[in-house]
Amino acid sequence: MADVILSPVEISQTLSLGPWPPEPEPDKSNRVSGSRAAIALGEDLFTDPILSKDASLACSSCHDPAQGFTVPVSRAVGREILDRNSPSVVNLGGLRWFGWGGKSDNLWAASLHPIVAEQEMAHSAQSLQTALSASRHAVAYEAIFGPIDQQSPEAVLVNTAKTLAAYQEVLVTLPTTFDTFRDALEQRDHVAAGRYSESAQRGLQIFLGKGNCIMCHSGPRFSNNEFHDAGVPYFIDETSVDTGRFGGLNILLASPYTLAGAWSDDETKHGAWAVQNVRQTHANFGTFRTPSLRGAADTAPYMHDGSLPDLTAVVRHYNEINLERMHADGEAILQPLNLSEAEISDLVAFLETLSEVPN
Image (cartoon, rainbow, N blue to C red; front, side, top):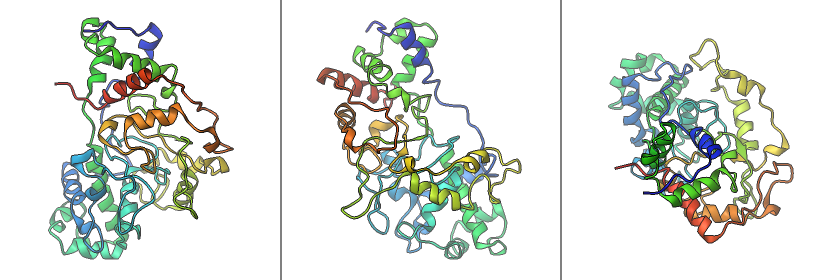
């Protein structure tokens, strides 16, 4: 049993990191959001290689349910080695931007892109329609959307992506050891809060204070879901770079699959203001979406390029960050943390509690 060592200000900051899980919020742009039939079909399709043109890949090939809905390799492998690490697809419901570069402003568009990407599943809308029409999924699909053969190929593509999104919306991590501590603080139950280790509490103090991790990893999701330069090299190889948000905006602003577009099922176009008002600037180059820290202990390796093998390596990266690698036009929000070895251990101990499920 440990004492609660947080100050009143630190307790207030800690309360802002919950409660968890959030209340489910249907996606108005997806008419099958929350539909049990769509969720079941989406789950079935998620693990079926029928979504790749040559039947060699499923969504679960890069987002394995047994491994935190990611895979333990630095860069995902589609039809070739891709440029980025596979992000987890849990806790995605209700976000504003999706993907490392934010090329989608809704979950069904984010689910659609890999199906048609030449380096990934490589379907055309027509080939996907043909495959689904002849598959065991046709009955379930038609029960939700009507006859496949009477729809345009693009409609079948979008509808398929919307079932995948309906499934992913229900993928939410369980409350953790941290949440038990946070909720005990809210209830002023210091006996229960005292069961949270002193090492994790010291790590939380660093997270809130000296490390200022909460600036980007804020709120119950432990992410502001915005784009920052984390000081990770964005060279893919000697001749090419990953432009991050800059390239993501190129795709987003040309996409017909946004909240402002005709494929959104929300007649009010709620949320479309974001894509309608976003503007590309040079400062977007080499910035990447802040990932959630919930469940992070189960999703190594880390960063957009999978270059850091474990949580200790992540903390050491920020502890000794090379400011010369920061984008010249980016935000000046990172400085070396200069943590001691004991402080590094404490911060990692705290981060691990964001994945620990209480007994």
